[in-house]
Length: 113
Image 1 (tube, rainbow, N blue to C red):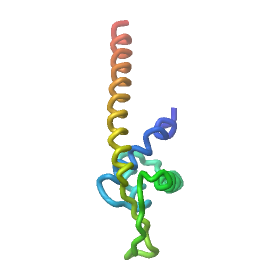
Image 2: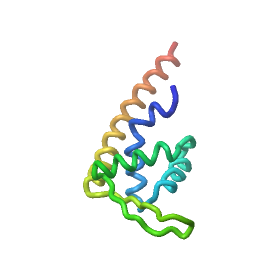
Image 3: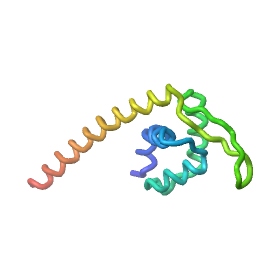
Image 4: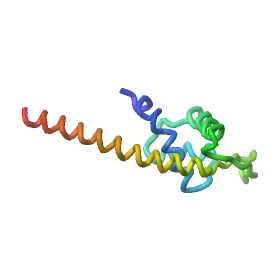
């Protein structure tokens, strides 16, 4: 199974978590995700996601001059985005706990054979 199939469901939450720490622009978001181990992340994945999150009013943006070229669009969480991010954390912890329990059970079963 490719990691991208699993990632689709959680990438939105991960992006919001990163934005919750600081204002960020698209290219920097790609780099941060890569630093967290999502090495195959591209702008082609992130930019449409940022547009979707902004359309859904989970993030807002402001355009600022860049010292390195064209202006940059910086993103920050909205109040709705903060609530959504807290709910994501809660749901992720619950889901990951359930999956870990299943994995642990499977490992015990295989070990006992």
